[in-house]
Length: 149
Image (cartoon, rainbow, N blue to C red; front, side, top):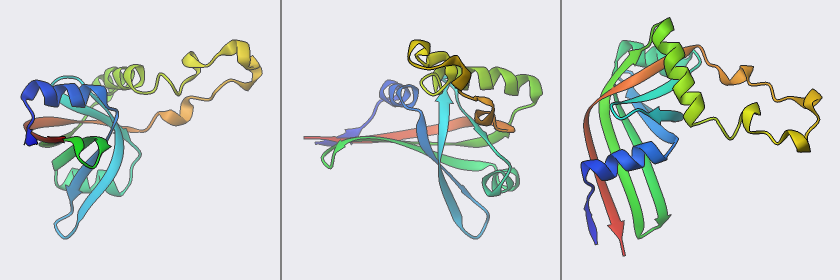
């Protein structure tokens, strides 16, 4: 059976996952990249280094964001969110970064390390997790489908 996901199902998928695919276009070619994200209920929050993706997004802020849950070839859920790229200023960026790190990176950071198993001198360096550009995707439309047998 295939079908259409409800808004609540789509929200649950977006909230439960942390990696999606961001699609943007430079006018000639589409560009799709995996990206770590946090969904706050209204927008998709991400961070990135300066590079090709950010250059494209600054020129053309219209994006598509996709997240899939795949158990098998005949048991999957897929959502697409269409929206607009918006770079966050310093104050908003810091608040967004705290949410992103608190919800996505908790398993990768020093705060979740088992100190009894590790020498504190070998502390994990979290500084490379901070990327310079914080942005959100303001969602204007979502769609989702599923197959379950």
